[in-house]
Length: 148
Image (tube, rainbow, N blue to C red; front, side, top):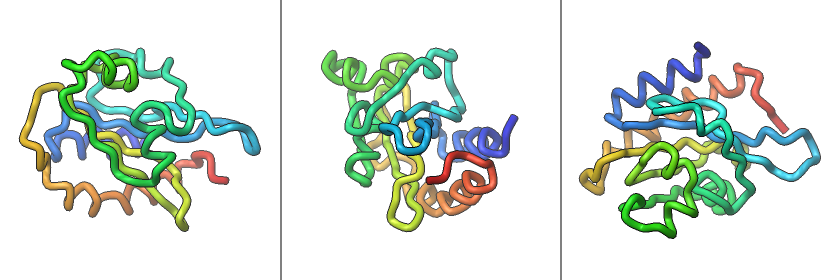
């Protein structure tokens, strides 16, 4: 298990999330961005591995395109959202929060918190989530993941 996987599992428990995932661009240099869920915790299957997203598509793609936090709620009761968000469909997530991880103003990854049951909208106080992002960024740098 990688340091990133351990970090995700520890934070998933700490933040009481059902699912925590990290999407990154896995395309070769100078190719069109291809986002994949490279590390996850709390998954119910390995089907997430088959998801390939372009910028602007899916939760990770929306965060990647805008560079801003994105939230989706009541996903399971909205067939349009189930089509739009394959990770939510495959992992039965009803609420998600996608957060960009930036370095020098460039998005390097997307962190996704997912919840399978409706929860209070202020979620795990996101202050703790944002405070933990620098440590994840360091792990990404050390882990030898793609760095443009």
